[in-house]
Amino acid sequence: MLVGHKLLADNFRSLVEDERLAHAYLFFGPEGVGKKLFALTLANFLEKGEFDYGEKFWIFSSGGGSAFGGNDAILVQPNESKTIGIDEARRVKEFLYMKPNVSSKRTVIIDEAEFLTTEAQNALLKITEEPPESSLLILIARDPEILMPTTNSRLQKVYFSSLSEGEVVVWLMKEHSVSKTEAEKLAKDSFGSPGLALKMLNDKKFQETMRLAKKFLGVSGAERKDFLKILLESDEFNMLSFLDAVILISSLRIHEADNLRKREKEIELWHKLLGLRRDFSNFSLNPKLQLLSL
Image (tube, rainbow, N blue to C red):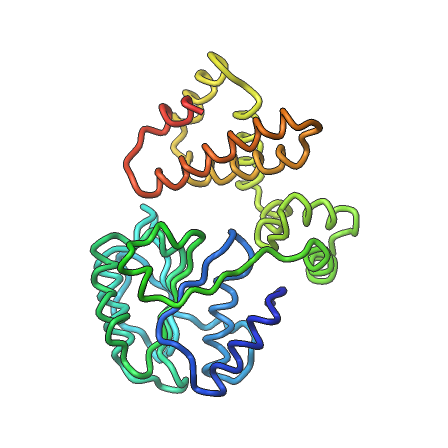
């Protein structure tokens, strides 16, 4: 179920009905606000005329086959190594150059597009420069600046904002039977992100990562060094997921700061964390050294 973004939904309905839909978009904005779900809903609208989520999408990542079945829309996601490489880009091109079976468009949705390799982005440039008439390419990312400038410049950008706390509260109570008190806390702590609110509610792994992030920010010096040593030795440790959790906890601490000095200190840390998160997505960095530098 799509939550919020009514104006965007109305605009895209009009674009489709007036045959003014562009061939390539970048949906960007905070995590968990509905960018991927909106893209899937749009693909379903193109095929069935219903602006609602359709579940029949052929998903592939590294190692996937090249047979697309009868689908007119596919969802591409990073592999376990968190990359979307040249092979996936070639299959995207192959798919988009085919004619649609039922829909008016062949649609490719690339989730977490910040993990497209340089080679993959270069391979997609021809599609964005000379798109087949019936093609629609949608990239989804949190930050458009992470993509190559040449890729970035060829995509029409659509920003997805956080929802109001009220919208998230109503959705949690109606769709997930959450009490009003708990829904209000989840809506506040997730900053209006339904996806994050749901993770906070149900995702045990996410809850554990949040617990570790909170502990990390609560220790310093030798104690932080010892904590990181244990943390980084775990086979299940994921640096990007951990940084996301630390950034979220840091954001909450900014809002909870009870004086200006504390708030300014938290904001300074938050900016450092955002920079580290961005750099870690683009460069090979030593996790321990980077985290100890905060």
